[in-house]
Image (cartoon, rainbow, N blue to C red; front, side, top):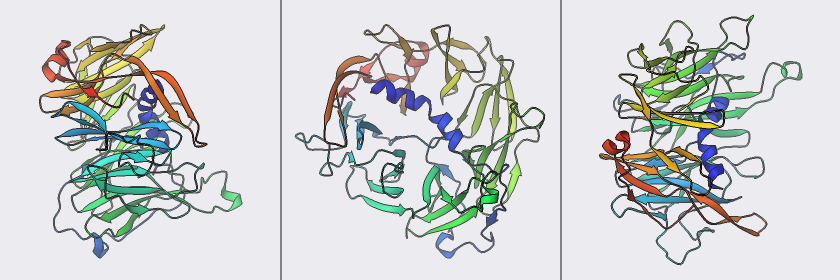
Length: 432
């Protein structure tokens, strides 16, 4: 099961791109709230900058951290998921539960989540927020649930009505939580071939009162081409997929626009569409490889400037970029049954071999992935081992099997980038 989870994580950026919203492709007319008359429940006392709470560019990201530890959601069954916590001080990984005799499979456990579909996990001050968006298999509403950092005192702060679904990213200015929803609308039969019947809405919830208000309606046909990739100041940044030449519909490019929360107006960050190779949305910037495979481009949102750096070796256009941190980036790709993992210096373009884990069972290797940053250390996953696993089915049956498990460890940032395996292993009580 863990191998499935790892593939699921690698696919999150692609899933986010498929589920993101498009303004350029809208065919119905957009509407908006008058920017000069914001709803009173959303009036702000100042103008603090927006902070992106979830991973840029994806609708699926079930990890979050505080200065004390790292939270993640793991699946253990068809409707059995659990919140797991890695404590940096004790160097231990546990279920978010203080009962040593608990089996963590029902509502008596604060780590237990009775759902198939946890899509987002983030933290605001001393509260943990989890987005639950059930699939069509469950007759349950899409919800945002708030709880204490120990998993207790749960409360649904947003519950969608029939025909609505929470989806996309989250951001806050400290007073308002900004989020997006899909709303299914009726479409006349004559328009159904060109209108998908799904509107994309931007909303704001007052964190103090819990009141929520729609701020902007992007219209229909908005799913698939636009990606919410970050925030700068009081603006949300979106990447648009465009087709510059109608004669070549498969040759797509990207452009970038900023949407002001306060004025609800758009401005262009770049004038000409960009034809991209591999890319990643990072904090305040977008990074991609040019179609030549030798040019690393970095668009900084607040300046609208694109810096170009020459790489010292070629990166394939189908490569996957992951984990931009401390001026470096991990890149990996598969070619002729061989996996390649490298580290790229964003300033110089230098490429070096990445840190690897090695599976003793399969003989395969992979990048030692950075899960979180803690002071001058990283939390990483290490060499996988085979351990007993349990999978719970909705009919009450239990499946037991042997699966790979990736133990976690702490490593200094200096040692990580230098390729030195000086690991402090985490005492894992979950092994899933």
